[in-house]
Image (cartoon, rainbow, N blue to C red; front, side, top):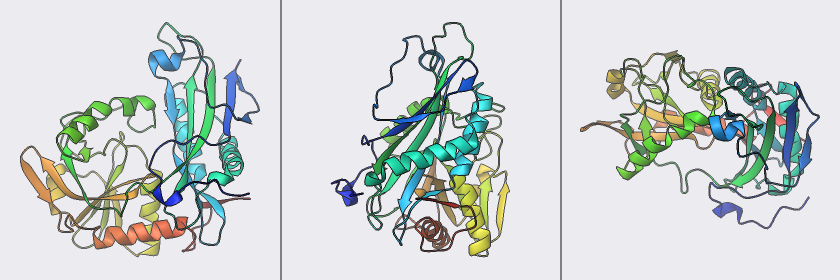
Length: 341
């Protein structure tokens, strides 16, 4: 299949309509068989549950062209599992995990012409999502749902390389104790919009959210987990029941231990110890790792020894190794890479 006539090397991180998307409907207690369709428009009642009460969840993952020309997807089984956990918490029917992976394969296969070539820095971003679609006026879960996946080619999250960013300690809370912070629900991201717009207006790239209970412990940003490196090269990530279990972060922990021989630790991280770390990064699907050079805390600055010019040395090793695995330059652990025939 010939590739689309796209300037792959100059793609931004935005939406481009592709040829096919997947949709499956849940009605009368069961999912239908699902299908690929061309229509990118969704028609629903003005009273649809998703519009009235935000009953929606989503995932994000990427398809890549590897060094040897194969098209692959990175750990889609973990996205399937996380979507299932999100559905249970949001009183939504679980879309079967094996069908999720199969649907991902179908969407990538149907849009192969949009998978960017190796070496361009671009990828095919996949967005699985589910929402309540029948009319609901009283506060209760929907009874009918749609599960969908669309694909869009995207450029690298950082043009010209991942330069360290400056973040601020937010005055807002991201998630309540025993709330929905550990699932990928749309409502979590909606409530973060004011905080991120405020941060940008103040000249910062992102927010650092502290735990809502005591405001003494590091949680995450609006859309990524934190990763810290100690001065003796130990990898530390915050542990909390209100943190989203990032697939990238979990993969980086394996890379650190099994590929780089580093000690890793997932534990509560108190904000007053952040100043003692050598490196800091934000990890997620879009950028893999975004290095943090400086944290602003109400007039006080925490400047990491790694500086504001480039990734710290340990963070860069983690980044290079994981992206090497994703792009086929480094052998992957068993089950991490799904080849699309």
